[in-house]
Amino acid sequence: MHEGAPADPIIGELSEGEVLARIAARTGRAAATQVGPGDDAAVIGTPSGTVVATTDTLVHGPDFRLAWSSGYDLGWKAAAVNLADVAAMGARPTALLVALAMPNDTRISFVEALADGLREACEALAPGCAVVGGDLTVSPTLTLAVTALGDLEGRTAVLRSGAQPGDVVAVAGELGVAARGLAVLFDRFRAADGAPVPVDGALLAPGDHASLGGQLRPSPPIGLGPMAAVAGAHAMMDVSDGLGLDARRMADASKVTIDLDPSALGDDPVLAIEGGEDHALLATFAGDALPPGFRVIGRVVERGEAPVLVDGRPYAGPGGWDPYRDWDSVSG
Image 1 (cartoon, rainbow, N blue to C red):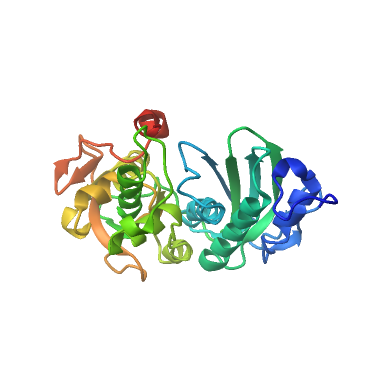
Image 2: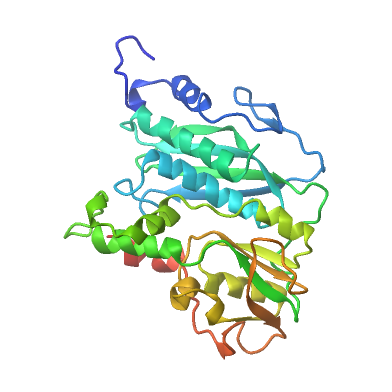
């Protein structure tokens, strides 16, 4: 830190090296790391000879609001959503690369909390995975882009295009919880002009805490992705944009129809189908003997006129979240 700088300086008062040092001190070391932060690129061991790679970007405004999300929340969520994509291929997450663009007046304590969230999400959801490098830059809009890498450990990747007629459709993880949390935020914690305001715990009912947790700090069942692959899953994907929309994507990729059973979708089937951001794992299997953690929610049938049915009737969705379609409705 520059001599005389405050204990919690803003980013504009520090050098890039000083900010990087603060982050690197908090993000841990991935078990597969051969060369970590500090060189031109990281080197990650891949015992199976294959690498699964995915990336996801969180932008202030459409993806999160600082009035509602702490730095820790943002780091946790950025890790979780990427880990879920790796797990959905049947792979074990091994490393994260993080690119952070932020305004000059961002407090270093916020960045440190974000790094803590990244580390602790990896520790909780994908032990052995950690941040191995990335990039820093300045932007008027806080933006966090994470690339996640994974190892198939000798297995074939499980694609969304492998569902077959006769398969059962199963899910691991929660459905509708994150959407319920988002509704709490938009319904109760916005000013008259629509601007977000901080969450007041006194206004939360007991069940609201779990819903907000599902939205701000999702906990996808990362370890169940490789388990599903070992159990012979025919198809699998991360339910990030809502069950109805993502089931349609799987059905279209597999050229089948997916028939969902609303009685298997909890006490609010509509929210389970229409909501998004739960990051559950949607998979199909040849028989009813499922790996632990998965539950049957439907069947795969021959392709018909509709890609998705609900209790045998065409689903008129797509429902779910599409940023190019839905952003105007939540941009207040």
